[in-house]
Each structure stands twice: as structure tokens, then as C-alpha cells.
Amino acid sequence: MRVKDNSIRVGGIRPELLIAVMVANEVYTEIGKELVITSVTDGKHSDTSLHYTGCAFDCRIYDDSDMEFVITKIKDRLKIDYDVVLEGNHIHIEYQPRK
Image (tube, rainbow, N blue to C red; front, side, top):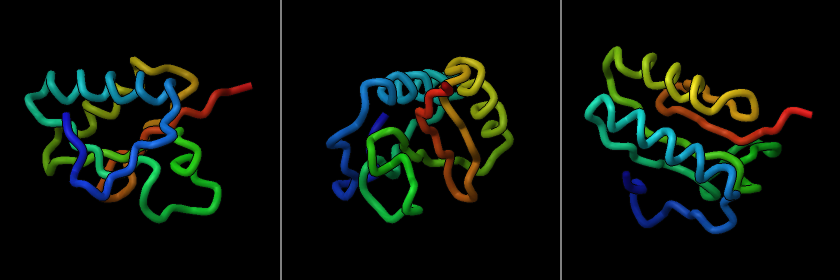
């Protein structure tokens, strides 16, 4: 697991999101791919994005059929308080507790 480069900011990340990072890393490792985090609290996102509160991160996707497996496995392991979404050129994972 690694961050893409020095532009990635992780300050302010929520502990609950660290669980999602660990789970995503496990799933990527299972398919022989490296988890590359491409955004956490940095970057430009929508005004209501959970990135700004340390509750979301993005990770690199690879051009193969394994990504649907990856998304499904991450969703299955994280359960209800997390969203895992394919957003064009990356997977977006966020901690958003249900009330």
C-alpha cells in the first residue's frame, strides 16, 4: 500500500476510515495488486464531500475485470456504514454512518 505521491494529504483522517484503508489493502493484496491511494483530505471535490472531513479516500483502479470483484469484496467486508463506489477512474470509499 502506498500514497500516489507527496501531494496526498492524510491529516485529519478519521479512525473509522483507517479500517476501510486496511480492508481495501487486504482485498487488493488478495488479487495481487497494490493499493494506491490517490486522494484523502487533499484535492478538489464537491462542496459536501466527505474528503474534507477525513471520512473518504480514493484509490487507483486497474484496467481489468478484477475491479468489480474488489468493489464487491470491500463492500461485503465494510458493511452498512461505508459506501464503496466506482467513480470513473477511481474507487471512492467513504465512512458515512447510518442513523
